Image (tube, rainbow, N blue to C red):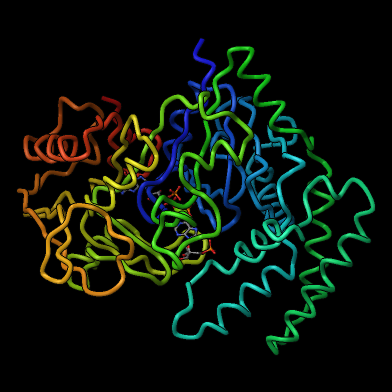
Length: 421
Ligand code: GDP
Ligand code: IMO
Ligand code: MG
């Protein structure tokens, strides 16, 4: 038995299709865990004509009685969690026996959401374009040792809550931010009652015990490598480590327990929110990607910015994460394209580089190579034997550039539209 934690994570700016693939891979595992992020995530799953969007709950929840764990590295908003649980229960997916929550996960307080808004409006033009879910303020409180954890709801909670809220109110006052807290607070407190219905665990023990017994664990990343707090396009990033190392700190598993690292990417590239995006397209091709790929945020509904695949950034992401298997999504979106472009280098101040630089802000000219499009509807294909020649050429090109095999190709949003190679 492998005694390993396999990690699946995004290599671009999020929304690569992590939820869909975690659902597909779950039958091979005993446990699916989330290790970072919170309800800024929106992971979409489609099967049997139904569509679900998960925010804090792992995407292994639809595959039988597998155990799903919200790990210590996650920030949890009780109000949004309650809404997510209720929506799933209404559609016939009871969760209380299959979903467990780490006592060490941090709580997003209702005032964290307000602080997120206050910080964003204070930044004006240079705002991050956050999801407005209080992610940054909640992680800031965790790091500055002011946070409240899920385990805190078990003892003296009211007192701890009152102290935290008072601190936040004082900050909001400094920002001259006007707000209405009562309604937010009411639904938040109801969410705390929902959390109490679940088993609150020491997840690091539960996961390591499972590994000792030879069980297989899948860690589900949120966001993507280019949004990582250390290695992403800072400051236009999220507030957690989205990279593979984040699975160790966000679950309490040792680096040597990490097995396969599945790196997931779109056959093109998208980004939502502000920040640099060297291969962004502002033309009809970009619009076609957005329309055909339904590139609108699953959490905020914002249109996603679209562009060609960026191999400089992808190689960097493969390196940082130690990716062992690649998963390519949404190639069907480019089915009608006559030519496909891939960025293989950046030209900065007239000098070409293949190495991802310190900053990608400012004037970066992407250097492209062009490949012929396959101009074939691939959405009905179920085996790699059906792949058109030009599509195989694109796969071979990417594998040669990235030096990692592409082991799964997704040709549509449905669970069934997934081809393993
Ligand atoms: P996640 O955050 O990484 O889980 O990704 P999202 O769910 O936010 O965004 C991916 C979107 O693409 C969702 O709407 C999926 O249903 C959809 N999707 C996933 N894989 C494919 C694919 O291969 N082709 C197409 N056309 N859509 C896909
Ligand atoms: P999934 O898991 C895409 C982006 C926001 C913003 C920046 C910071 O669905 O791939 P935050 O609210 O985290 O402080 O916002 O990060 N962002 C995402 N973009 N997919 C996500 O999650 C994202 N989560 C955050 O748009 O630019
Ligand atoms: Mg998403």
